[in-house]
Length: 64
Image (cartoon, rainbow, N blue to C red; front, side, top):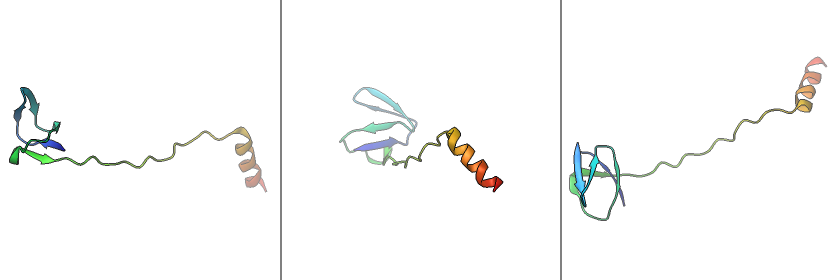
């Protein structure tokens, strides 16, 4: 399970972690860490460049 360190400095298995670091471990670390859940972002469709034909079609519609 993933945890986020909430104390200024913490050693786990000889590795130093600082506040805000994400740690993946199965040990019970008590109140020194809080559970971390990754936020799944929805990807927005990327804006694409309009083709010349599309641009001319919109201009023709506006002129009419």
